[in-house]
Length: 305
Image 1: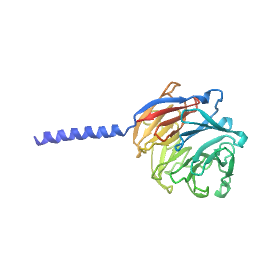
Image 2: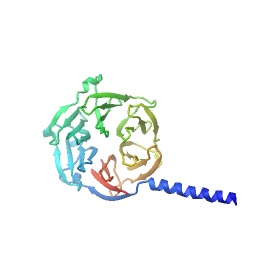
Image 3: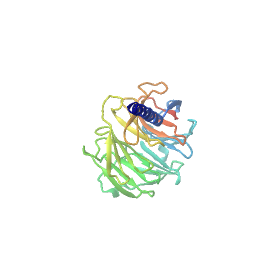
């Protein structure tokens, strides 16, 4: 009888554990696509997406056309920042809504510019003070305290700046050791200040504390469902799940806070819920998921339940 009760309790425990895990996995529902990108405007080589969660406005770097497109939450184009404002091949975008400042990195020049909401260049962050002969800034992100984090593509480093654009510290570097990168692509910072770096070669995702100290890494490169072929973008949802855009597998791979694989979303195609070279991910104020596709030149939006 005692053994029977123990077995029953074990079964109940397993069922409850599985239910808790299942409840932690987001349930997604396709909502709509922002297809204005493929209409008269056209788009070339989109690289980054940023959602202003205060206004639910959507910023997209139209890199090949030297401009930034801004959409409202209904997917209507409301503003363009283009070459007339001296923007050349914008790559990374982040917006400090408190200061009405748009941070933009330029793919060709390697510069890091700060724009006002009209798209005019307010100033450039002086990268010459970092002690490198040459720096090429890639993707950008802001933490909850509005500190800025930027990828240095040339030197394979992450550079951090304070809210005034002053250099704080950098970490990483080209190499195969823990905390180094082989093809650094994107980064994200969670509510606790942990920094997540995505590399298309070597360890797919590496995790650092707020001071840039290496914590752990995860993600093997390969064709299996839980592995990553060419990870290129990352987003962190409000439950601290990590969404990685796997461009060559035309899908999203979702992991929990500790790097445990949760599920895969999408496959190659142009239909609803399908992807063609997804490159970046972000979330609006309601937790909806926005996926920027390079191949289909569109944004797909999913409700996360």
